[in-house]
Amino acid sequence: MNFPDLLTGFMETWPGYIAPKPLVHALIRYEISLPVRYGVDGVCAISNEFAAQIAARGFPREKTLPIYYGYDAANFPFRPQTPPEGRPAVVVMHGSFDAHHLGEIAFDAIRHVVQNRPGTVFRFVGRRTAALEKLLSRAQREIPGFKFEATGFVPYAEVAKHLADASVGIVPYEESAGTHCAFVAKVVEYVAVGLPTVCTPLKSIQSYFEGDPLVRFADFNGIDFGQKIIGWLNESPFQWQLEACKSAARVETELDWRPLCSRAIDFVEKIYSDSKDKDAGSKK
Image (cartoon, rainbow, N blue to C red; front, side, top):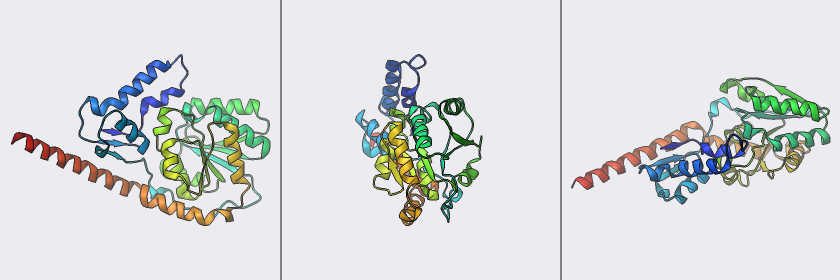
C-alpha cells in the first residue's frame, strides 16, 4: 500500500457542521488500520510520523518505508543571488491553497507583518481557490496597507521563478493529524532554491529539518509566526547565505525524486521477494 498522506486527517480542520469530529476521528482510525485490516506485505508512508502511527496500530515497522514526498531538483535550482536591498520584502507561499493551508494562523501572521513591516508584499503562487479568495478578501477589509500578488495557476516547472526573488517562504498550516503526518513539499522546494522558511511545527517536517539553519518553526499561532517572518526580514542574507547552500545540497541529495524513487523501488522489490519466499516456504 502507498499512503501519500493521512488523507482523512486533514478533515480535523474542517468546520464541524461539514465534518463532525467523532466521525473524522473514526475515519482516521480506519485509514491508519488499513495495512493490518487487509494483511498487506508492505507499506510506503509519506513520513516517519505516519510510519509511527501505522506501527502503533500493530503493523511491523520494518515493513514500512517512509518515502517522503520530495521534489524535482531540475525544476528548483539554487538561486545565485538574494533579492537586492532597498526593494519591498516579498513573502511567498505556493501550492494548492486548501482550507488547512490558509486559516487563522495565516491571517494573523499577515496582519502582524503588515503592522510591523509596512510595505511587505505577500505573493500567492497557485490557483485562486475559495480558501485563498476568502483570505484575500478578509485581509483587504481588515488589514490597512495589505499588499499582495496572486498569480493564479502556475505549471510546476515554472514555480521556482516566483520563488527566486522572494525574501521568505511560508507554510502556515493549521494543526491536524493530517498536517502532522504530511511531508510538505513547499518546505523542500523553498530550501532547494535557498529561501529562508517559516513553518508551523508539523511533526514530520520538524523531525527532518530540526537544526536546519534555513527553516524556523513557529508556534501554532499567527503572532509568533509573524514574528518569525520579521526575524528573517531583519537579518542580512550574509548571515545565512553560506548555510543555505549546504541546506540546498542536502535536499538535492536526499529528496530529489530520482534517489527517492530508487529507494522506493528497492523496498517494493524486497517486499515482493520476501513474499515469494514466504509463499514457497508455506507450500513445502
